[in-house]
Image 1 (tube, helix red, strand yellow):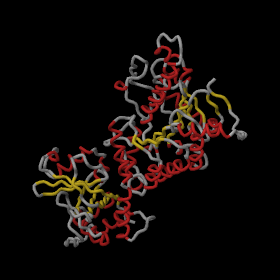
Image 2: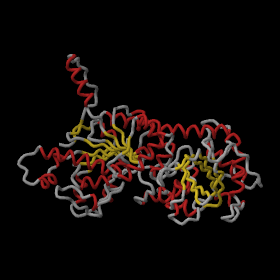
Image 3: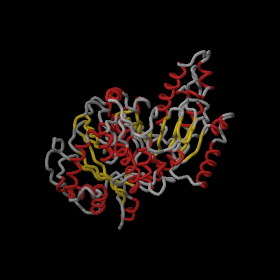
Image 4: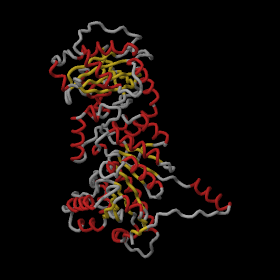
Length: 539
């Protein structure tokens, strides 16, 4: 029987002989810590769980005797399969429309199948890599909610292939958290947590539910544990980052933490991504321009609050290799940016000092309001430079105005900006950007549709090669034939650019064509940048 009821009382303590305690301590020192995967999209869990489950199943099969054909045994005997505990508002068992191809051992051929966050768990079930899914869809599922979830699942699998519909119905069990904590499992567990569970039926206090889940999970011994943020389903960036902060603080069990940041140029995975990204774009001041914000792919993690970056660095998180080299490389960029957090914090401290604001105030709002207040000034004089623009002590600034989808004007001071005289520099840049000759002059009636992007960049460093920069974190300066062209790192975030996309846009801006950055005489510089966004508000 898969599931038994368990009495959740305290177990009595026993006094053990000293030599047993010493032996136990030695074995624990040699014990490998469990791995934990953190990502934004739940589909990142697929290859992770696939590899762990496949290895477990193969080990179990190797212990069996009189097996004439391993594949047949593997596909027809559920007694060797682990159970997936899915802590998730969604069931992630959408029917597979691609009818994946299996290799000679009976395992899926990765080249013939791509999964997404809506079907990854169902795919593992169809491949017989997991024997059952325990779907815990909330903390408190009263009968109306429970019936609604069950009907939703039934509707989802109606289009499944012949035989798959019945199999999935028989091997997915819906419950709430109260059922789960009373359950005892005979099969080994794989646990996965989606933070969208805190947005629906989390009980009276989502923060408390987050602590309960962290406590329950760390008291299990799963084969592996994955968790995802699912930012596109979240209603509040501040809430999501706070829940992750709570979970990280509550989960104290030693583990090897891994991060999968997603890809540059992240594509829409499901319709939910499209809806979520459109919502972020429509409500930019709330979702993208605050102290806590959402962006696609690695840009989500680049812009994670400092307290999250610090907590994950303290857990010695490293880049996940199971999702492929492109994911690994992007995640390495994120981790390097967190290592350079001190440099970015120092730069922001100088900005705050120049603005006269403390750590509790929104720098982006202050800078944006300053840019809007001066955009129609008639400032003719360039502020006095504090040093040469390419000196090691130099700081630069750029002010850019745009609508949700179109640039309306920009002006940059590459360096020499005195941050203690920040308003004068912003006033000059804003007034010039508002009448940028590349665009029609900004009119007052446009203000309600405008956003201000203020970027502050540190000293310029010559790049070792063209890809020697971090998209979204570094602004680039292209020097060719005694001309210089700058492109702010913020553009990469806003347009979800890859490295090559960003270099192409820089080259086009410089008038060198899309591949101008490859010219031998081009010299590229990078500067770590802080980007702030603010939408106009007449009040």
